[in-house]
Image 1: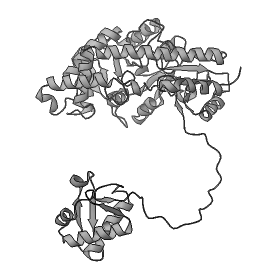
Image 2: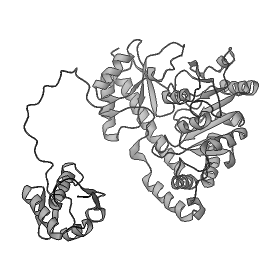
Image 3: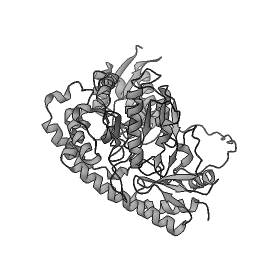
Image 4: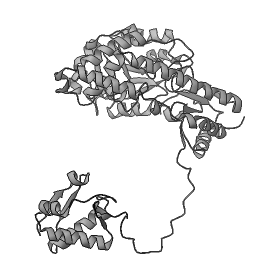
Length: 478
């Protein structure tokens, strides 16, 4: 019988096809197709099948053939038929398999249970996403958007969002810009790809100086682009900018000056000035990742380095910490000479950031709801931070939390030689967290320091206390 297909989507609520092929008469082929659809899960238990007259018409076969097929599958227990309810897939999975003696599984070493508590860094509280404000902003934005907004996207980003960002970044982060210097992207990782390309031949070239501790996936992006990274030492004042002039031939430097990731702390004012002096003297470029710059608790706000010299600094940011990493929106604030190259790298049409999200974020900022959300989250995370510090002071006073004046995580300094065993103990306590060594540049020469990077923003309120208790149980004794 020739192969044919029927789309049952409109009648049974799922996009499912029946394949009628193989040997046998029409009735046998239909029974086999229905039986296979149930067995493979394409027809779920409780799914209502179309009336046999409709299915017969769609398949081009006799009504009696379909009726007989339904009747046989009902008798076999695959389907059920009730007056007024139609014919449905029976509440059963698949025919029971033949009983077999299971093979003995090879012995395996015991493994920790799946994590019960998420204490990884860089993850904002997902339950705190401002759904009501976002929905209201989306309605207002869509109602007022011009028709052309829904045409081919502008690779630079919607002008409404670029205007809103120019005002917000200038007011809150001290960024000196205008909408024409801003390019919308999907986050800092995307920004790095736009700047450096992949496999070489990007707008910027290496070598690039980076902080000795930082995000490994950013280094991976640079490595994929053929960029060699050179680690800079870190101390209590941030990155050691003086190392840039100690015989290191680099074209640029990537920094997290507002809150060094992951060790914490802002870049010292003298070093902020020094890195700009270096860039001017050497024709270099500073890449500023404004990592969780919105969240500070015990110190005054630290403005962007970009404000010192907009022509020597590329400023990068996103809403991944302030709103959600699921909102794929970020931005580049560029020196004038890089704008055309970045737009060429993006292409003629916007392929990354959807126009509705751009319009919604612009409205959220312009209406003031974004500021209110950030202030609310700042207070919530500060409370979480205070609770972490208090629990450690009571139950593990020999462990020093650092980098807690800002951000969404703390670094717990551990006794030398205990990092690996403590991380393993944390896994056994059901904790998902990261060790400090995971963020260390492989070529770093500065002395190692044992520690855990503990995020305090993700666990739900009802579980946060239990997560901290489990953390204290994992820490090494005094």
